[in-house]
Length: 461
Picture 1: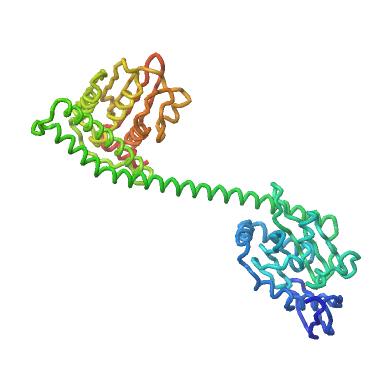
Picture 2 (picture 1 turned 180 degrees about the horizontal axis):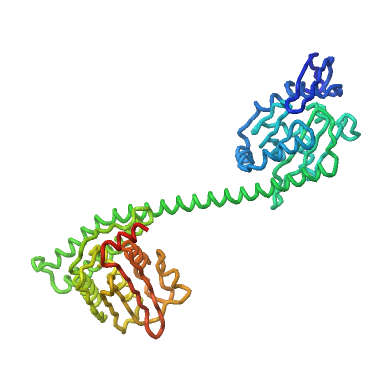
């Protein structure tokens, strides 16, 4: 403690990296008395119980600051340049707050004993004064300096030369200090030295701000990714859990429509509406599960085979939609007599989603047209509806998940149908396009290769 006496000792010490040697034989003295030899003062300071050994103090209080500085690869080089240019034996980047001083990076050529993560009591340092004024403190020869020769910091740490400049981030936040000390005098008040320290401090501040911004962005992306995965897993689990009770409802509705059920016309109509609703719900769940599986990395399952009845498969889809929408006119022009290497069920799902989209968003009094043709080495399926065109600005987003046409008053479905269509076409190695004008209506055109080799090549790209 201040005023306490130190035992007399004789020390012979070679200052690492400095080539200087000092032999000290001090008498017992108080810390309030200037020790004649800087070597002995620094050594005594490191062994006094006033602060304890710096490296044994709390090293985990500011791990984020230490880690942030450690990620700046330029800092060790800057600290070495500081010591080489000034001839001082110790330099550091410190995180300085109103109540703490933490070493974040250290160049120690004199065995001061402080390492990255080590802390000093803020009251014993000059960095607190630098932080308060936000201006550098520079001392060439502390024991002769009229302002600092009686200051407690040079006495406690046995230092003669000292320089500390503030590190202030571009947003005005005070991070800490770039500082250097030595037990011998050094000409650090030279304008070039101060300019070098100031430039280095600004460079550290800019890089630290950039590192913080990058870290915030990384964390935001990680959080967003984790939330997205959790949401998609929840959707997948929910879809599976809904299948069980929905299958039970569908089976019950089908049973009630049997002649043996003996229902009257009114009750039979209700059973048919229940069956239709369960089919729509099943389709929605299928869309959700396909979406979740695709986004979670499972991809779209394809059961590829040579489908010889592609035309019949598409006619089945048209018939189902015509049955579900008796008030609408669906015009089909299907000429696909060539075998198609595809997933028959996915081909029907593609046509069904496109037809459902056209029936939902097309003009109610106008027909919906579906055509399928073999064109060269592809099967081309087009679905066209009249009505309000899709805004040009919306076209780039039309195949994104949960997208809905803002010009339509219909709000059926989840907005996954067109996204799933695009994924089915992509999985087959094909292409899906949309054209929409007021005069010609809206047309979706899906082109799928009919040969398996083309699909295999597309999947390997």
